[in-house]
Image (cartoon, rainbow, N blue to C red; front, side):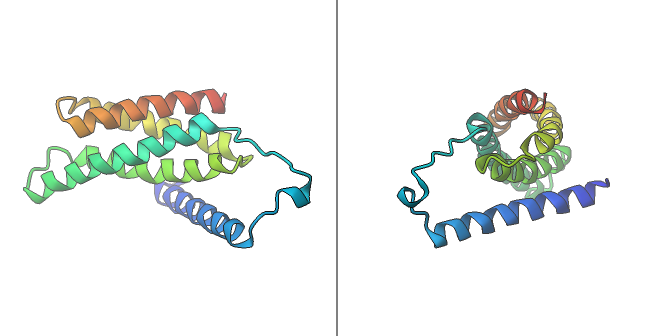
Length: 149
């Protein structure tokens, strides 16, 4: 699968997750009418770490864009890496949050993306946004390994 196709697929998964969530909220769910079933999150830690990656990734991307606006291209590789990270972790968070059976499959790929982004972040460890993003990348990659294995 080419990178472009992969990113398109991730975007589609994220969009479907958002639509499904909105539909479920719109329809309402009478818990008592269904016997009071409890459907706990299977991937709580993964949902949290992927959300954290998106948050710190956006801060890092904002910094990268600022550098590019100043004509400083030293962070171009970081910009590309964190863009991929944000898209991948957004999709993973959406699947993990709803206990999707496809979570482990996506977690394997996202773990690799997190690891690659973390390595880019390490090159700029003196920048707060990069340091925070790198820490989030490592935490998410670790959770991805747990789920994917």
